[in-house]
Length: 105
Length: 105
Image: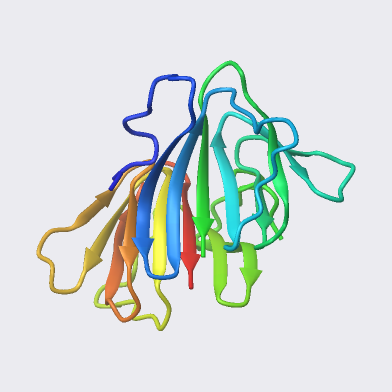
């Protein structure tokens, strides 16, 4: 289990990386590191769990189904994605890692 | 509700400040800002809720009942405090704000 969210940052392998910080029944907290990745066109996340995300480094743009306006997340911005809300990652910062903290329950 | 965890940092008023980032049934996520505060001597938190904390800026030292070793949290370090675990804040950084993200459920 990763002890520090800013430690052991993965290099850019062309893929996002996912590391749990906590995993107990009913609550999982993970670090996600993106290097410019986005969701494929027309791909939507539709999750059974609630998710709360915050961007701790870098930046990202979310697209939420039914909303014309994109959600821009800069360092420190957070967003609530209740279960079933279809969403996709429109973009993440191309010039360095974007570090997310995600709370799933 | 606070939109950015690093925004609108309170000045040092001599007290810790608490701001919710999310508050839905069964899940509350808050920012705590400390300016060198610690728990009073012999004061222990003993909570009905589970709590997960991460230090995003600054530093802190936790004391957990029954453990001789103090838990030092520097930027990015996190700690799990299950319900009922008696703990106290031994110290926080004296030279600037310590920003905590706390997940309660």
